[in-house]
Image 1 (cartoon, rainbow over the protein chains, first blue to last red):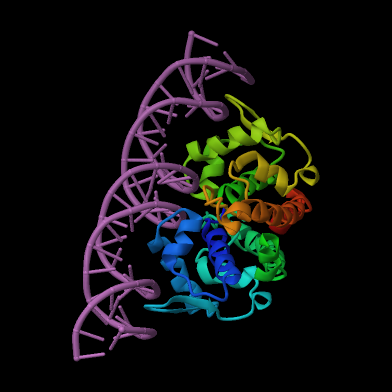
Image 2: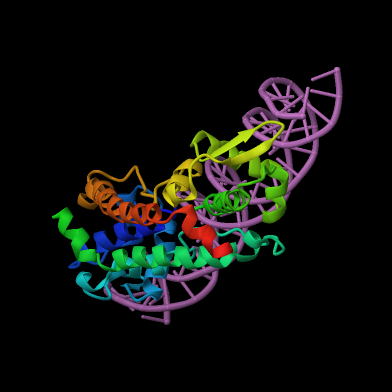
Length: 135
Length: 135
DNA sequence: TCATTTGTAACTATAATGGTTACAAAAGGA
DNA sequence: TCCTTTTGTAACCATTATAGTTACAAATGA
């Protein structure tokens, strides 16, 4: 199971998208999530590096860096999630056993297919698809 | 990212499938994985409860409970993984905010679609598909 | 009866997450 | 130029899950 970083980041981006006119702060966003501003800023920092949002000291968040229609959930996922692999594979198997020798490669190939399908699903959903639920 | 329990369980089942003739022990399987027998038995216990393998004290593992063609990776996944959700959703959001009020339901619906697709992929692969790679 | 193996409890170390405090640095605006 | 606000980040902490390990009672085949 992936962490909630994707979910929280979508939350952050949604708040920004819905208040495009104003500039808002990590403090404000944190109050919508019911968490603290530092956690929000930690994610904001990564969203900024991925060029999904614009920020400025003193002013706070000044908006999305792209249109909501051009931000996919895969963009967000890649921006904030370090551990992108869907399934873990145990290493250090016994290479003298026919299973031990080949299991890693076999599973890797198989999991890659599933992972690719998942990522395609994420790339097909945009922030705009999500924010329209909130209006 | 899911734990390696699925991967290790597939390893266990593969060893059993490839040695269908003989009965083998957790000790033997552990040597192929390069881990210890108790960890193998912990997973074996769940595979047995899910009716995927047959075991007996004194004899050890006496074989698969079904044909390898009739054991899907989804069966294995459900047998050993408690945390089946693909993505975590943060709870306790601020219901006074339009985003906070609806984010949980929106994400749940969206993630469910992706999860279902993933599970369908897992159900389409059988143990037989995997073991044929090892011969 | 006895030797073997499962099944399970209990414990440990490690790593990731989510939460939190604190503060330097940036930068807008008076 | 100075002040105030906010980001960006470091440094913690508590909690949880994983993977590994030891130990042993109970089951059971021979």
